[in-house]
Image (cartoon, each protein chain N blue to C red):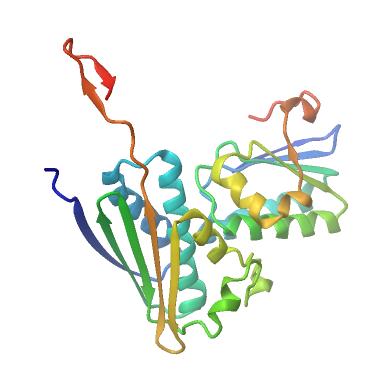
Length: 158
Length: 113
């Protein structure tokens, strides 16, 4: 019997915008163990980038804080938790609305949560004003056709 | 990012080669606006062929440049928009303001390189 595949990693870094690229690339490198397609990896990178940017811009604003990422792999699914201890979201439902932004003067599009929702299979927001925000997202990586060797040692579709 | 100005057509082409996120848009924005003011083009094309990553920061970047260019009398278009970048632009509705140039021949035999 095939053993159930499980793995986990944790990442902590300060809320500097130069860490946005680091965070999405690190999560993508971890997710690579599930053998995702290039498109699936791009979806994960985009969603992570949106959540981390939110923590930096909205959670901590100009102050410095710690952003924590917990990443779990369970069979063919990746679960990503991104949390900050920043100012929190007052109205989560409003924040999830496409084009809603509290910072329109800074050329913010208000599309962050909409993108996370559509690029991942699920997205949940927990937030307490004054304490912080945690975004939990998951995505199932589709099974590829298994390849096995035939009697001549050539890879064929199973 | 590189840019090229075609005097005859008053066309300014930007080839973006950075990853477009909240961190990088700040420097892209500054360079683009500087070049637009310098050349005062009638037509601006953003080439996304070398963009390996973009998140929603790209929407804000393009809406901002659209507003700035329109105010100065220029038309804005985009070319080589594919994959997730295209999906993000489609979701935002921005393509109604900034159309895609689908074919390189649309830009009057100008090679973007």
